[in-house]
Structure formats: C-alpha cells, structure tokens
Image 1 (cartoon, rainbow, N blue to C red):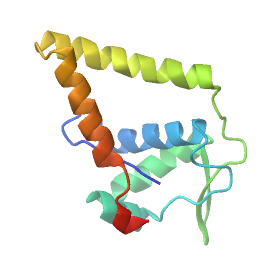
Image 2 (cartoon, one colour; image 1 turned 90 degrees about the vertical axis):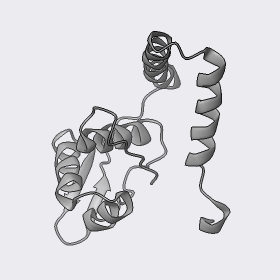
Image 3 (tube, rainbow, N blue to C red; image 1 turned 30 degrees about the vertical axis):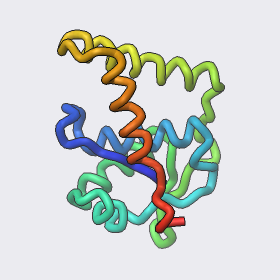
Length: 131
C-alpha cells in the first residue's frame, strides 16, 4: 500500500491517510479482504506518531471502509464501494482544477506544473530494489 503524506499540505495527516485509503479502495488498488499495514508499521514507514495512524484507521472503520479484527489486523471491508471510472476521473479532475488554480495564482506556468507532476509521479513509483 503506497501512502504519501505532506506535512505542509494544510490537511491533517490522519485525513491524508483516510483520503488516500479511500481512493485506493475505490480505484480497486486495495481489494476487499486485503490487510492494511499494522499501525506501528505504517507509522514507522511514514515517520509519524502511531496515534495518527490509529485515528485514521478508526475514521475508516466508522466509514465502513475497513473492519478491524482485534487479534489479526485491519482489513478492507467486503462492503467497501468501488467507484466507477467516471467517478474516479471526476475526483481526480477536481484535484487537478484546484492545483491549476493555485499554480495560476502563484504565477507558475503550466509547463512547469506538468514537469513537477512528472517528477512527483516518477518519485512515487516503487524502486527496482523493492520489487
């Protein structure tokens, strides 16, 4: 499971985790019954407090996205909704619109935004060492 957080995003870290897990589930990249990393494992990977991950997992459980089994871990719920491609594109389009508006307000040209998107995309790809 690939989660990326940004402390400077302005969005609380636990919400960044919640939103990304929701996107991963709705996009089908996390399947029903798939186990999420243990709280401490994800906290260590993201270099954050385990309480932050625990809060995110609680939010996801309340939303019905995950189910928690006391002794075995946290799993994607069987009833987690998978969004249609149209809905997934709509969600991404909204985020792109916000990015472009912010870039425009900061006088950052489109070409530079596209270059940054490519760089960030490349940085998010798993390295050959992890494969």
